[in-house]
Amino acid sequence: MPKWDKELDGISKISRSKTFYNAGLFQGTTGILAIANLLELQKKEQGLVESALFTLNLHLLEDDDHIFVPGDSCFRLSGDIMSGSSGLLLTVNDILENMNYSWMPILNMEKVFRSTNFKGGEKKVERCP
Image (tube, rainbow, N blue to C red; front, side, top):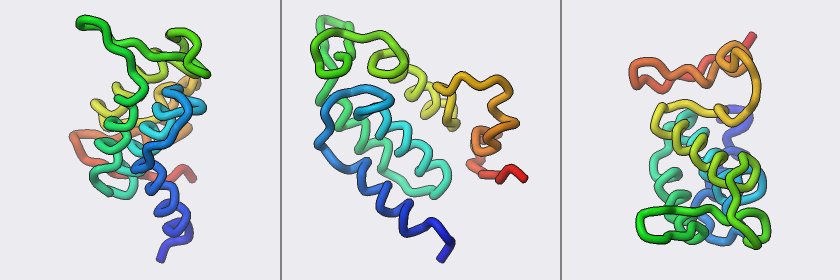
């Protein structure tokens, strides 16, 4: 058993949970969605993103054909990365592009985190030396 499998299995259970305080990337369901995506890419465990998306739907507000993200404590709508729609859009883009970490403001991300490179649909994780 690899060194971190027990911890990663425990973390993967979180993505199936339904109890979160808000929708934010740093303190809410969008963050769980980002972790679920990372675990699916690295462990090739299916269903984590789907479960986290279902839970995220509990927090989103819908009006006609618009979707809004409530901010921290759900007092207002939010468009920022930490608690709002920007963080959600970056995370959804990561899922669609088979990548992760795009929400981190780091130049040359692929050189820092090699796990961001998944070319040709192949989900291969390389470790930095």
